[in-house]
Amino acid sequence: MPEMNAVVAVYATHTGAEEAVKELQRAGIDMRTLSIVGKDSHTDEHVVGYYNTGDRMKYWGKTGAFWGGFWGMLFGSAFFAIPGLGAVLVAGPLVAWIVGALEGAVVFGGLSAIGAGLYGMGIPKDSVVQYELALKTDQFLLMVHGTHPEVVKAKAIIDGTQPISVTLHSAGVAATAVK
Picture 1 (tube, rainbow, N blue to C red):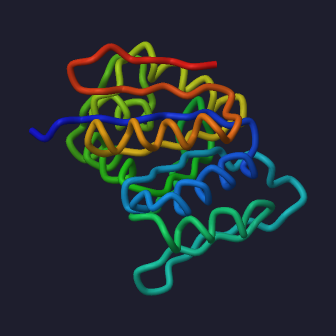
Picture 2 (cartoon, rainbow, N blue to C red; picture 1 turned 120 degrees about the horizontal axis):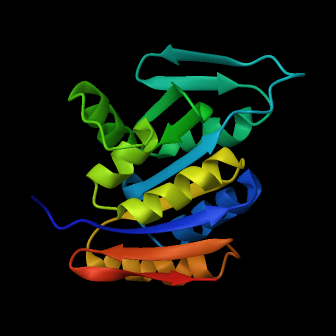
């Protein structure tokens, strides 16, 4: 099994997460190593739709431009209706981990499908619970996966983007939280 390393940042708004993605892109971080997760809970006054055109999923709604941009540049995209969380949108490699957990009927006591995907990729259960809570409160998760030097570089960039929190999860090393 390959070494699992990730940096996970929590943002209060989609604009904060979007700015962080732009900073990571400007710094040369491989966009295929990024995942972003957020709820789609503000649809009361907006038409919401999801559809697939060829190999690219499309979305429209209140944050349609935000998600549409990520689905064009990140590897993988999905929409999940998860009990306890509601409608959740995911872009990036985390999609494969979530689908793997669901297809394999992997159940991690008390975790949602998102949590099972995070846990399956090596994020400690106590951190997973914190990230699920962030999603429940309409915050956004931004993750960068890669080698230890890659995630350390990404963390340094993310630190400058004013996340609510940022945590480095490295194989064989205890998580390092900031903020």
